[in-house]
Image 1 (cartoon, helix red, strand yellow):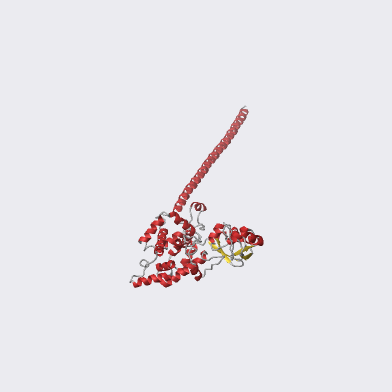
Image 2 (cartoon, one colour):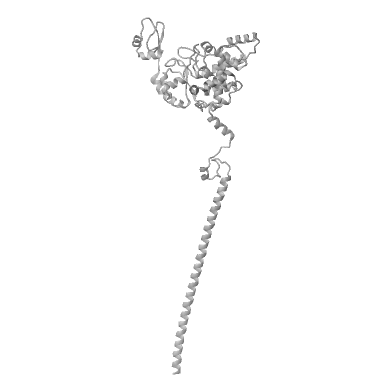
Length: 433
């Protein structure tokens, strides 16, 4: 009985021990899991804190960089597009500056208004603007701004060449404005004494200075040739008189007449000076007019004068030709109107150049390539052969047109015959074929 009781007790004790062991194991596992979960949670918190710290650091770094960029941007010196250290985005908002004085000077010269350049180089008028006659013409021209505007507009294609020629010869810049007085910069101007062109050469003086004048062409009207001849003439006069006012007096009045006026002043013991010499009215007004124009050009803003600016240094180009082609075809090849072509080439007296003779034409620089492309095609289709006819008694334009197989309009145009169509015995007619 006692043994049975012990066995039962032992069995119960063992069962309890087993249960306690299982409970201990389960408790240990639970604690382990709790520890791991706590550690994982702690690790996650550390990771989150680390990430937050990194983001804060990045944000701080960006702010510092932005501040530094702005500070650098504010202190950066002017830069050029070729500086590799400069941020592209910065270049988009900053205008590059050229610090080269030489380059700045060139660009300024290229964009300079020629009238303004001339104004800075005028000197003769400054000491004589107080003269009564000079003041009279200053007021007169200032009250007629439209006339000055028209003459200045006429000068646009011619003045750059005149300016360059005067600069080369180191002559007073007032001479560039002399055509204002002589012709109003109208290239085909003809005086009552039959002086012609910008510089108003008479036939005899023109021939003396090598200006050809014939039935086909008058070089007194040629812009380049007449300008060179006029400046040669003025230089010759300066070599003789040494005083530019006396030079201009001789240019207008003639050397012989001026010499007589100077001798007369010597006999009267009067100082030989332009302002004291006894000269005709035209010559006494000649220099005051030039000085008045010089004063106005030098002070356009003061007188509120709206003059067309001139920016091109060389607006015209010379093209040499050898084939006789109608002026209308030459104008068409150059892409400009016939009226403008004649303004640039006023020396032609007929509707076409002289046959079998070399000649030159002036064209706008911008139209040179256009002319080279078009002229070859137009030459083949529009070459002219010429004939001539000496008019006899009884000849009429109608009969001559039928005889030579040409249109009456072509005869009238080629020979500048008036609308009445009258021709006289002995007249020489050109017959275009």
